[in-house]
Amino acid sequence: MKLQMASRLGLYAVLELARDPARRLSAADLASRFGVSTNHLAKVLRELGRAGLVTAERGATGGYRFVGNARRTTLMDVLSLFEEEPGARAADPGDATDIGLALGRVLTEIDEIAEATLRSITLETLLRLVPKRPAGAR
Amino acid sequence: MDNNRSPLGPSVLRLREAEPADLAAVVDLDRRLTGTVKTAYWQTTLERHAGGPPEHCFLVAGDADASFVGFAIGEVRAWEFGSPPVGWVFAIQVDPDRRLVGAGTALFEGLCARFRAAGVDRVRTMVDRKDHLILSFFRSQGMMAGPSIELEMTLDAAIDGGAR
Image 1 (tube, chains in turn cyan, green):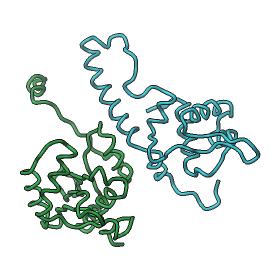
Image 2 (tube, rainbow over the protein chains, first blue to last red):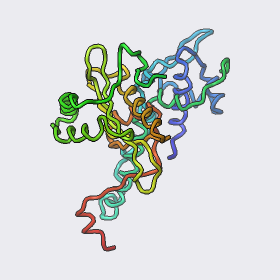
Image 3 (cartoon, chains in turn purple, yellow):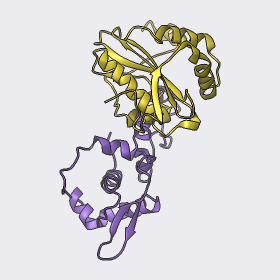
């Protein structure tokens, strides 16, 4: 499964911030971690902010901080901010033909499995899969 | 570690083996969750798993206020398509009014402890892919997709499409 760049950055950013909700990270700091431009990441962070998952705080010690509920927010909740959910695509030419309908059953099966996976993994569950950082690591 | 104790402590939540006297509570909880009364099914299941061989396990969770807040059933099976023996979880239900205090986790961990004691190193279950609540629960316990994909069809489809 290939995610759009904004979705990947959204997931990276929200997970990086959610692993330590007390920590603030600047857009530049996050961008350097992921090897992307600050400008590109800033758009993603604004979207996460509008969704109530992160907040930006100004000042010398400011930066972005996770303010969502990691136990209740799923990977799908984040992905759906940036791209269509599986199965939400518009009708394509040929969909209503007999072959299109048969093919549609297979594609629906794939979408439902992807949706089941993405809707059942919360940020907290995913962070449990991330190896623990050594003490003092940023 | 005492696997009969929940993360919240023994005075809050305890696990025990199911008893025949639990039948009414099991039937009632299942009725509340599924809308269906299946007394005969649960009676047979209790008889098969409660107090049975170590490969079968029927656990009940209770807390300080109630002796019954949920249950879980599992068994060690070795017959699935040549797979080595694994522990199967085939039922886990918790009173909706007593969720989010660790009963489901305690029941799951209790089953896993029984499976380890029975000599298996893997636990498996099967869940409706549209039931995101129970999927999330098993995911939160660390479960991932296994190597098998469940396939099925209606028997009408077998008749229509079988001779190709």
